[in-house]
Image (cartoon, rainbow, N blue to C red; front, side):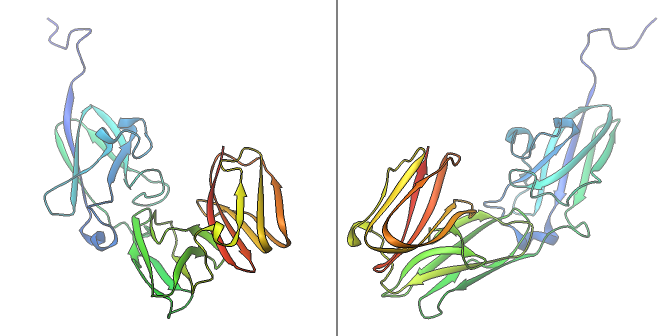
Length: 276
């Protein structure tokens, strides 16, 4: 007599609950905005955040323990934890992965404190002038944790931009949110005491067409001295000195939003242009 499962029956599965305890790194991320994911061979190594219903680890009350349950067949599995979407926020980088062997219902308890992991990364915020405004949001973060920074100008000053490495523009928004890279980071808030102009028509400057497909033209009533163009991630595509009132640029850039910083005798103008 054959007492095994009949041919065609669904394979037996077991309930496996994964728990990741993050108490030791609780000061380096914000559970109200950061999301903890799990992925592994049981999900065909789907990119973290790609299958949120299956990958999202759920917070246990007000603790820093996060949990998710799977029904898994008998076998060996590899897995790993990540902070926020993408591969950048792993509990550590590269192999080895966590491994388990499933033969019965089980709880798996892991701790986010592996030696050598990238946590406690420093975010330092500076202002181009201490008398022009204040900056907030610096601290220590896990890799890929969400950082929210803010620049507040003093009376008589305007906020212009955030830069990295002095001249690499990363944002023109005073309130800026981003994922912490896998390295320490220093950002500088630039303020201007009235020379910065929010509206180009105030000193007769035009950037057109907007949106642009394969060329653009900048016209100014005053001499243009410098122009810098970067993408929204801060990669500089053009940095050029000029000495005229008009500039034409033919391009074949990828579609997206680009940041233009234009210096003239009347001040500095920062604007965004859409490339289609």
